[in-house]
Length: 459
Image 1 (cartoon, rainbow, N blue to C red):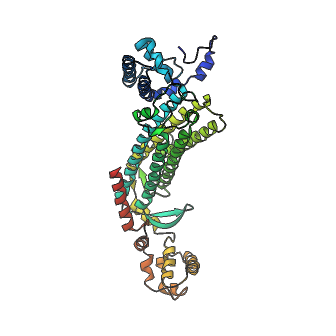
Image 2: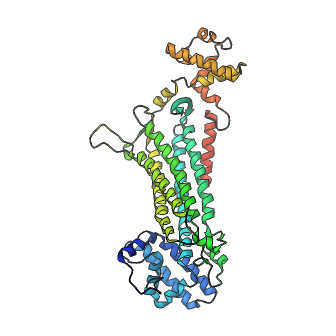
Image 3: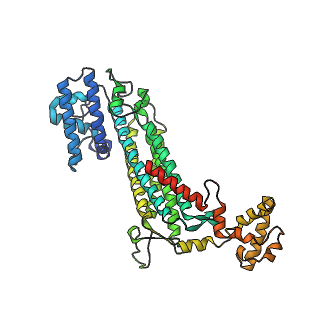
């Protein structure tokens, strides 16, 4: 029996029926639908719509359906249900007869699906947070194993200043930390109960929505019934937060793709996370990272799609909103597998510390340290910057590093430069000088690693 067929006498066109059906993908909500339905049955019993023995039979049927959905992989295959809600109702009727039709009293598919989606999404956010933490652990582990490794830091993709490799990795730890904050913040807005709002005007029965919210683990209720059934802000916000996660994963993937090339050779990916070429036998391709980089665009597309779906909808519910589920489900799946694969990649990275250090020691990356040296000698920074620029130009012409210039060559530029300048130009000195909070000095990086480990241990 259709949930809406009462006033219709003609048959639904078969192609339209397939077009209209969402069961192929919203079946994923079945456990959330059953959870919400059990609570709704209790609320109906509390206002006298269901007798105690009816509540018991409905609850038994819902538990049985839930069990079958969990334990029988093909239970829902080949069903002709329009959506997960009609499937559950049909199964209940098969279990307990017409009593199953009483459960929909006082609710609409509009508040039902909004409730299901929020229950489902809050659980998925919790799972994603765990996956983010695992990736953070992988970053910290790789950083901890390479505490003394130095790499060139880049701006504009040009070598800029030397930094510790763990300092670089902890930059991504911080990005993921913010991602956790956004997901947690979004979860708070997800966790409001729409059930009891009916189609848009509210339920015709005095359901105790506060009781329903508590029973289902919500922080409170959606305060306006029209907004409750027409809102998908929480889906848009979540996909937006997920998009930023993918930005960070894609940036790390891009870095490691470059660092694994022969031109950089800072890292090597193990065979476990690489592929070969069908033509060129010498190749080792970073497909794991390239796929993460590519899948970021897929999630961005879902965010744009949801914004486009919702931008012109009049209040309240419209069937356009059925488009939320595939975008949401694919976002969850894509971000989850990307987090997991990237954590695996980090566990399969060999760092070439000697090559990275060599790259950090050339290209005049200590030029700023020379300018800082002059400032400490009393020269204004802008003048020091200009003077060092001229020194670098001279050194390039002589094909020398800054630390290879003689004291006399330095004095030809400024009498402020004495033989102690070489201490400031050494790689270790350059790193140690960056000792302000958040800097790349070994002491600050060790402290940051300790903080990260403590945070993860407490999470």
